[in-house]
Amino acid sequence: MARAWTSPAARIILDRNARSTVGNALAVARAVRRVRAHEVVLVTSGWHGRRAYVLARAALFRSPTKVTLVTTDERATPTAHLRELACWTVLPFLAVAAARTR
Image 1 (cartoon, rainbow, N blue to C red):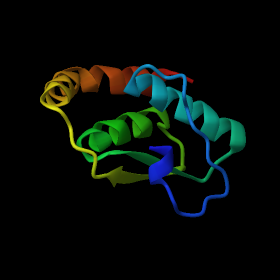
Image 2 (image 1 turned 90 degrees about the vertical axis):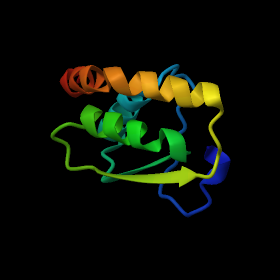
Image 3 (image 1 turned 45 degrees about the vertical axis):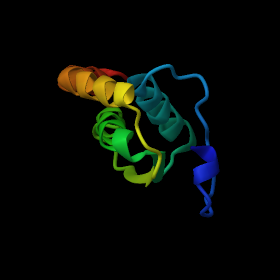
C-alpha cells in the first residue's frame, strides 16, 4: 500500500507491525496523538477500505483529526471476501473497544 501512495505528504508513517485491522487502527490513533496530526490518509484496498476507515474513526473517537480513505484497485480473493464478511459481523464490538482505548 505504501507504493500506492504517490501524493506529497508532510509525513508518512507505515505500520509494519499490526497483525489486524483493529491493531492497525489503534496504531494510527497512537501515531496521530504522538505527532499531533490534523489529517490521516488511509491507503488500502477498495474491498477492505470501509472497514479500515470505520475502525480508524473509532480509534480516533472524539479527535478532530480528519480521516481520508484512499483505495487501490487491488482485487480481493474469494477467501478475502469471506474473511471481510466475517469481520463485519464483529465490527461493532471492535469499534466500541477501539473507541475506549487510549
